[in-house]
Amino acid sequence: MEQLQEGWTKLMNGPGGRFIELGIALLAVWLMVRLVRGLLVSRVQDNNARYHARKVTTLIGYVLIVLLAVGIFS
Image 1: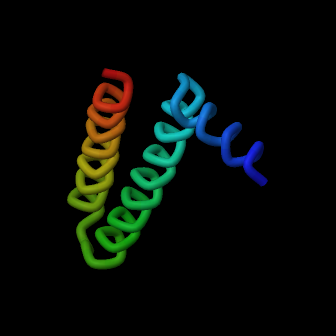
Image 2: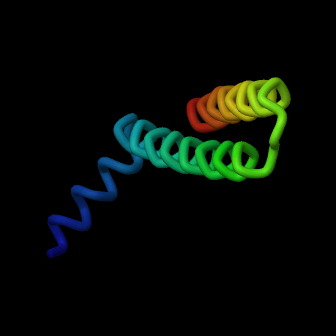
């Protein structure tokens, strides 16, 4: 058991840990963007406004991913 904990600690403190953190952050942002897009699509009636709402939500998601990646790897 102690060896498992020691191996996990080495993994998380090395570069692999940063990639795991980034993967978790990507998953969280992706789920959040999907949730917000779903809520917007169901509430916005105008097709043009719906299109732009989805695009803005996706853009905000990309910006969040870049900021999180910079924060994790800096």
